[in-house]
Length: 311
Image (cartoon, rainbow, N blue to C red; front, side):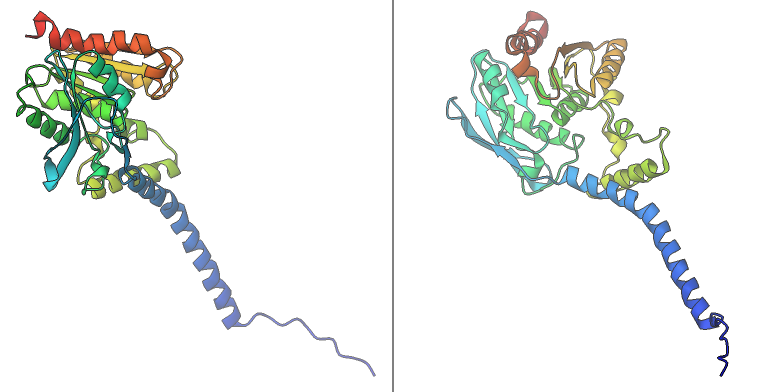
């Protein structure tokens, strides 16, 4: 008996509609992913940069010190260490990034051995505030520290300088521009313009552009400020005739920005210098060239704060 041949069934209307809906879903998901993933990466990275755990450091048992506190912005009481010196001048050691008041004692020892008073205090992430602005709003903490120093009999308010590493170096430059009472700033390895380093306003790929937009928007939401404020380059020209020392390693990616800042500073009458530490990367300056560090950095502040011209 012959068997009849069955012809293949045509897809039903319901089946075709199902697959079309599925295809649309995947296309929409793909488009969302192409936009959302790089944008969200920018948001997440900025969250991570502004809200990092505190690294408080140790207790300076080998140095004479006083445990101090003073009022700071946003209702915070800052905690710090004051190290009394002998030469009448004072260095404010600005905390780098997430570091606490006892985390940069290697710098304290260098300045203290040269006779300076030294004041350290906490990064904002080590206070109840719990987040930072990467340098711009931290100028307010420098101002609070200076106001506290003016209450101490052993401090000459006309002989106060700043030292900072990385983001704190950038803070120091912006603080010197905004606080005319301060006399000098040595800045190590900081950014010259954060938005420029991020690539904002320049040519970029589609994914890089979305990442940058996410980071910039997140910075505004998380800190209440514009990321364009993070620009020592924009303010360094207003510091003159006071003194600035830029310290960067020869292997440091931010060295080109330092050269741009030096050029702008010199064009506007700032007493600016750039010391490039040969063979050093980010943060290696003191360990790579300890004797030269004393000669360059300590000597710079001695000239700015102790010479007859500084009186």
